[in-house]
Length: 87
Image (cartoon, rainbow, N blue to C red; front, side, top):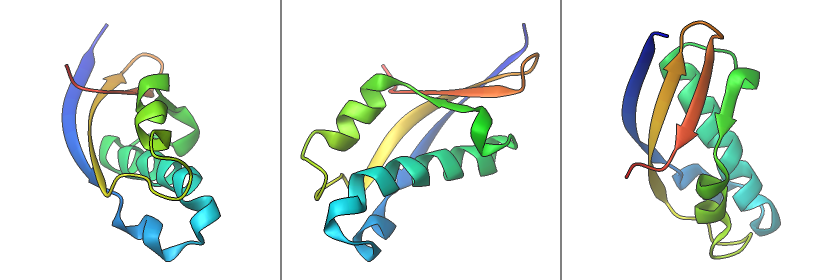
């Protein structure tokens, strides 16, 4: 199984442009879009780990972090990407 691993610092500053009650959900969309663009897969083939979701939602819906560091693993056979927190 050929895999490609990359570590990305994803800026989430654009979450401040949406209403307060939609910021955490929009941050997840930004992560999915960023990873799909950089790993060259469709957005529906990006799987985000539950721990990444918990970090985004840790301070509630109104105050997601302004940036996050993630590890993206691309599986060539299925053409999917898994987004995890780096160890």
